[in-house]
Amino acid sequence: MPSKILPVLAIWLLLRPAWSQSTGATDPGYNCTSTQSCWPTTSEWQALNTSVDGNLFATVPWAAPCYSSSGHYNSAQCSVIADNYANSTARSSIYGACETLNWETCSGTGCALESLDPSLPPLFQTCSLGSLATYYVAVQNADHVAATINFAREYNVRLTIKNTGHDYLGRSTAPNSLAVWTYNLQDMIYHETFTASNCPAANGKNIGEIGAGVQAAAAYTFFETYNMNVVGGNEGTVGLAGGFGQGGGHGIFGPSYGLMVDNAVEFDVVTADGKLRTINECNDPDLFWAMRGGGGGTYAVLTAYRFQLHPAIPINVFAFKASFSLLSSSSTLTSIMTAHANNQTNWSNNNVSGHAYYFPDQVEMYLVLPYNDDGAQLKSLTSEFQTFLTNDTSLTITQNNYTTYPTYSEFLALTQAIANRLTPGGDFEVIASRLLPRDLFATPSNVSALVDAVITGMQTNENVLDYFSKVPTQVIMTTPANHPDTQNATGLNPAWRTALWHLVYSSGWVKGISDFISDPITTTALAAVDPVKALTVGGGAYVNEAHFEEPEWEETFFGSKYDTLLGIKNQYDPTHLFDCFKCVGWRGANE
Ligand SMILES: Cc1cc2nc3c(=O)[nH]c(=O)nc-3n(C[C@H](O)[C@H](O)[C@H](O)COP(=O)(O)OP(=O)(O)OC[C@H]3O[C@@H](n4cnc5c(N)ncnc54)[C@H](O)[C@@H]3O)c2cc1C
Ligand SMILES: *[C@@H]1O[C@H](CO)[C@@H](O)[C@H](O)[C@H]1NC(C)=O
Ligand SMILES: *[C@@H]1O[C@H](CO)[C@@H](O)[C@H](O)[C@H]1NC(C)=O
Ligand SMILES: *[C@@H]1O[C@H](CO)[C@@H](O)[C@H](O)[C@H]1NC(C)=O
Ligand SMILES: *[C@@H]1O[C@H](CO)[C@@H](O)[C@H](O)[C@H]1NC(C)=O
Ligand SMILES: *[C@@H]1O[C@H](CO)[C@@H](O)[C@H](O)[C@H]1NC(C)=O
Ligand SMILES: *[C@@H]1O[C@H](CO)[C@@H](O)[C@H](O)[C@H]1NC(C)=O
Ligand SMILES: *[C@@H]1O[C@H](CO)[C@@H](O)[C@H](O)[C@H]1NC(C)=O
Ligand SMILES: *[C@@H]1O[C@H](CO)[C@@H](O)[C@H](O)[C@H]1NC(C)=O
Ligand SMILES: *[C@@H]1O[C@H](CO)[C@@H](O)[C@H](O)[C@H]1NC(C)=O
Ligand SMILES: *[C@@H]1O[C@H](CO)[C@@H](O)[C@H](O)[C@H]1NC(C)=O
Image 1 (cartoon, rainbow, N blue to C red):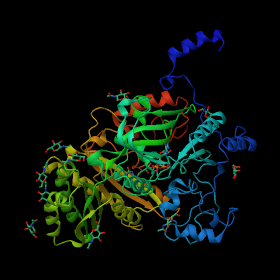
Image 2: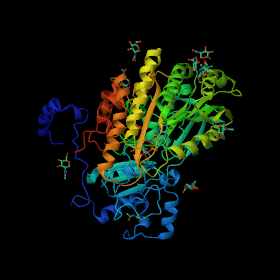
Image 3: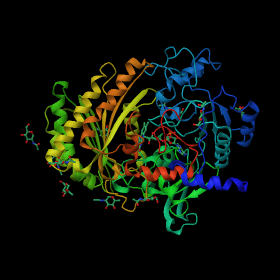
């Protein structure tokens, strides 16, 4: 650097705006598109392909074989795709699809099929990329990640990171981008004794290690062979190390062991400067803290995730299912949900978690306790509640039993089947959620206000949906209720720490219908959370399972951690190479 510009730089450093605080680097926009002269030439793409050992690919949407003009038409392949259209395993195994159609498509363009009958003629006139990246690199190692990052930086091209494509806010895809696709990073290692990198404080026992592409079911099975459980979720195709493990990661072990981020020990990452780093509480501790809960896609590309395992334990389940008349919907829902809420503090304190699905004329509930007995503990904690339900003559009960699953994999077969039935892939989905704190369960009048708010929201949500179907309102009891993070070890939204319920309204549609129909559905789903928001002013929602139009997203998704997270973002990614929608540091639609 010529010395004569130093005085200028010194003045500029004093006056620099907050967003460029640590390095003074500027943001080139990462907005070069394929129609512009800045877009890399064919030979430049080939050079990237060489540097990633031939793993660069032009994106082909999954259903391209079903579109006659796509250049990929193939009726045999098309019928296999149509048969698997709602199959999340199939969807997550290729780059050119997402879990929901919203983020595969873009404003009425894309390459989708009809969700209810995928064998019908395709949804759009022509097959286009929709929201998918133009090119993706099927990375096989961290060096491929670094080469991809360096290329995107050099050519001012938007970089996206896609793992399984489950993100409800569409953060794993963006048009005109170059994608890092982590599917092939499938390594799994069990460390009976673990030595952290330059960090004796982080040494431990029974540490699991997974590559960024490992999906939940595979991890559960693998570590079970060592008699170990993973703090995972209730569905097998979600990626544990990506959005799940960086944004929270809740499952039935939440009350017992906290969330996935609470169990994180060490990560291998590649930062925006292309540097490979092993980070933990000693090395780049701020970055490690931010990536433990501050959201995926924001600070660096993670390639390996190391985390605490827990001795395998039987999973006890109380399963209950009943239907009731729509005529008594409001009073029956109020009665059951009140009893549920009255018990919640006791259950959470005693490590009972699980899922309840409330419908206008049906309730389906799974109360879950990981506990080393024959189910007696769960029975004693839930027997009054069971008696209450069984005694309710307005219910037609179709399931009402206790089961002990010897392993988590066997338990997953239960929750996976429920997820396939109630939350399948391959349609257009919108959800809206809120974390509901302990205080709302304290007194009968608090519970009454809470139950009224939840049911009012359900009714609002359903009003616009009668032509679609009845959708479940999920009361998820997997919060880290006994893990307050008093040491500030994670960047997780503090609203999780006091929550007993993660309440999720679901909505959606099944065709590429016009905005005239989809906009009211989307807006109504967001309005459904208004009553519980009124009870939780300044409260939060789970960044991974929320409405994409959530207005005060900084406060809602990150709470009081936002400013610290933003400072760390700006330090490690000063030019905003990793920006994603409503992630820390996102500056709006026009960036
Ligand atoms: C059917 C279903 C069931 C679910 N069940 C649960 C549940 O039980 N518990 C729970 O907590 N959540 C659950 N979720 C939500 C889930 O946590 C999020 O969808 C999450 O974003 C998935 O992460 P992913 O990496 O698999 O998905 P992706 O959509 O591929 O990625 C999500 C985000 O993480 C980023 N990302 C991915 N990989 C990396 C990486 N290696 N480095 C940096 N950034 C990365 C992406 O850019 C994107 O921003 C569920 C979702 C669905 C659709
Ligand atoms: C790209 O982003 C930069 C920086 O924000 C901006 O100056 C430029 O106008 C953008 N280019 C286009 C084509 O939008
Ligand atoms: C990259 O190289 C591989 C292997 O030669 C090839 O199959 C692939 O089509 C190339 N990608 C592009 C975009 O040309
Ligand atoms: C879902 O897809 C996967 C991968 O393509 C396949 O192995 C599996 O059999 C499919 N499941 C069902 C129920 O068809
Ligand atoms: C909840 O689970 C944790 C982890 O197993 C255990 O330490 C704690 O004692 C349990 N709490 C109760 C009330 O059983
Ligand atoms: C929490 O930890 C982060 C990361 O080390 C730190 O930057 C922040 O100041 C801490 N916050 C509080 C309130 O201590
Ligand atoms: C659980 O709910 C049942 C039914 O309302 C009630 O009888 C019981 O007292 C509740 N238990 C607790 C601990 O609140
Ligand atoms: C929870 O409920 C059980 C069963 O009713 C009771 O024995 C126990 O004392 C309660 N625990 C708490 C913490 O309220
Ligand atoms: C059972 O229901 C009857 C009315 O139908 C009610 O009087 C009684 O208190 C209920 N018992 C329990 C244990 O809830
Ligand atoms: C008992 O509940 C389990 C869910 O845990 C369910 O799969 C099973 O079918 C139920 N059995 C009966 C007899 O209802
Ligand atoms: C709980 O109810 C009391 C009155 O019984 C009220 O003062 C308090 O604000 C309520 N708490 C919440 C979190 O709504």
